[in-house]
Image (cartoon, rainbow, N blue to C red; front, side, top):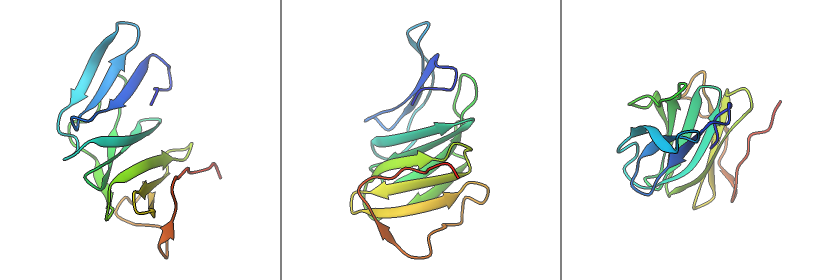
Amino acid sequence: EVGEGGGRVVLGSWDNSLSVFELAYGRVQDAVDAAHDDAISSLALRKNKLVSGAWDCTVKLWECREESISRVPVSTLGEHETEVLGVSLDPDGVLAASVSADGGVLLYDLRAPSDHLLPRPLSAAAVRVLPS
């Protein structure tokens, strides 16, 4: 995921870490070790919100500042039955969605992260939140 200014890239890794890579200097600016309990498979970034999905079946919300990521997640948004394959955020950073290997889809209102917005289970292979 490329930051809004274009000078930084947020990386999710097989070693379970999150990193902010500074393009101008060619180095890691900040890293969060053990961000998840298994490999990070997907990221979505809008404004100061970063959503990560991982093979540990969880989806987490992080605060992403200019050059760093919060040390602990703001919230664990959800837990799927199988590995998370994709996450998405709407352009305003209010809604997030995730999809897992078994096709399960979860939708989250980031203003109340503990609430899931789907009244019934959905099935999909990919997910993208569109502008309203």
